Every structure is written in C-alpha cells, then in structure tokens.
Amino acid sequence: MTNNLLPKIVIVVVTVVACYAALQFLDKSPPATVDIDENTMSIEIEGVPLGLDVLKKAHSQVVDSRVFRFDPVAIVRMRPNLDRAQKWEEHPDGKVTLRTNNLGLRSNEPTGEPKGRRILMLGDSHMHGFVNDDECLHELLEAHLEEHYGEEFEVLNAGTGGTGPYEYARTLDTLLYLEPEAVVVMMYTGNDFRDVLNLHDYAKFGKPRTLSGEAADLNREIRETWSHRQGMGQGLHQAMLLKQHPEAEKDAVEATLRQFERIKARCEEEGLPLVTIVLPTKIGVDDYTEDERLPKEKVLEPVKLTFEEYGVTRRMGKSVVDGLVARGITVIDPYETFLAVPEPLYWLRDQHLAVRGHALLADILTPVVVEALDAAR
Image (tube, rainbow, N blue to C red; front, side, top):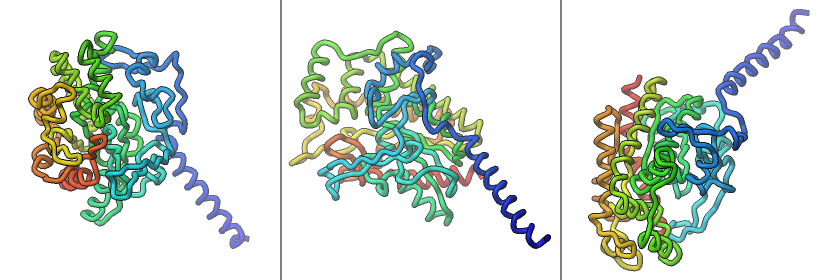
C-alpha cells in the first residue's frame, strides 16, 4: 500500500511546488494586456496631471500605431511580438530585422522566469537599435558579461523609439518586477532634449514650444524634399528649435536631470547600481559621407545652421554629464572616443547607431557595468 502511494504523493508535492513558483512570478508580473481608459489615464509631469488627450498630441506617433502603444505608467512602450524586416542598403545584409518579445522588449525570445543574471536597459530608438538582434548593444553586452563572469546573463532591452527621460524613469517603474541586478539608461543628445521639452511644456504652459516663421517653413520643405530628411529627427530639428527658443536650453537640461534623479532614487530603493550613457550625434562625431566626404558645415546649410549653432547639442549633453557626476551617478560620455574613430559609427540614412557604433559602445560599456556589479556584491 505504502509503495503504491509514494509515487502519487511525490507527484502531488512536485505539482504544488511548481504551481507556487509560477504564482510567485505571476504575482510580480503586469497584466498581459493593458486596456487604456481615455477618461481616466493620467500621467503626472512636473506635478501636473496630463490626460490621454494631451499625451496623444505629445506622442502623435503612437496614435493608431502598429509599433507603439500607450502605457498607463510608462507613457509609451513597444508593442509585443513585433517581427519587422526592413530593407537597409547600408547594412551588409541589405536589411535589418527588428523584433520584440512577449513583453515588448527587443528580443526574439520570450521573457519569463530568469535565465541568468539580469541587466535592464532603458533608452530610445538608439537603445532599441536599428541593427539585427545579435549586433545590438544589449546582446553584445550580454555576450561580454557571460565571457567575463563565466555565467549566464539576460540583458533586457526596453528601448522605445520617440521617448525621452520622462518615459525612461516611468518605464523603470513598470519593469522592476523583473528583478534586474543593474540598470543602464542611455539618453541621446540629438532629440531627448526636444522630447523632454515636449512634455515639460505641456505641463508648464499647456502647449509645446515650436518652430515658427521661416524656420517652420524650412522644416516642412526639408522633410518633404531633402535626401537626409530622416536625420531631421536625430538632431537637426532640435537644434533649430533651440536656436529659435534659446531659453529652452536651461529648462531641458534641468528637466532631464530631475528625471535622472528620480531614476537614481528608484535604483537606490531597490539596491541596484545605475550606469548612464550620454550618446552624441552623428553630425557631432562622424564625418558625414555620401558619395564623397562632405564637411559637416555643408550638411547644416539646408537648415541654415552653423556648426557653432548646432553645437548646442554637445553643450547641453556636457551639462547633463557634469550634472550626473555632481549627483554621484555613474556616466559614460563616449564623445571623445567616438570622435577619434575614422569610420562612421552611425547610419547615413537616418543617423541611428550603426553596427560599428553598437560594437564600440558595448566595448566601452562592459567594464563599467562589471565594476558596478562587483561593487554591488
């Protein structure tokens, strides 16, 4: 009798333990789908609640998008289970494939129970990556860490295009249940200041500062006709905006640093080391090439900017770097390293980090993350 009961008891015990473990993970997980109630969704920015009607204006790219979705905490996230192959002549394969998993993270594998030590990465489309999975910063960092430590890592890439520091801080809140051991946040100096100003201005003034007059006409014309119009969103539009609204420079830097203070505080609550990256722009560090090498000043001529005027991007980036250091936040400023590399690190077509840029940044980032992980133990 005892011999017949023993296998059944073992099966029951194993089943109970497995169910308990699954429930423990599910208890910390967000809902599989997020239903947005337009009447109740509200995000507090600078102490002012902004409803979905305002967020739709601030993030018009999300409305009716098959790529992005609104989130009641993070504001904007990538949709899950995307699989997009896009022709890309500059890539050796002639195309890039962009995938997200069940949680909307940049991966071709689902995220569930941990497969190894986890690192969480936050940022915009430069973090999300316009390269293939195995060429992207998160997978390169993962491989470097596994080689260094001899154990398995899982680097989670929550990069979301069209977002900035307000969204990074709030995305962190939505993903801490995944229990990372460290957090990496990358801001892109070419448009994150514009992105932070957008929400900041809706909160403070009820509307964003925009281009007007000749600058607005020029912006429309270039977006319709210029061969490099995709680069407008990667730095040129922001520089034009700050030229017309120089008072916005201080607002943008201060708002950005406040969000990093929020991120730091959240990481400290969880006992997580924080590493930040302040990414420069293509025009700032690359020789701009097409059929032949062009001086940077020639690229700026169509938008009527001098290189000195475009330099506001670097100046503000340096202000953020200095501000992060002053706040005791680990920061990587790859500007000088990128500047010294003779080959292009960004795509010509749209000025996102190219394969070489991701590889170099992974080489720079890895020892900093290793030092942070070791110090935290």
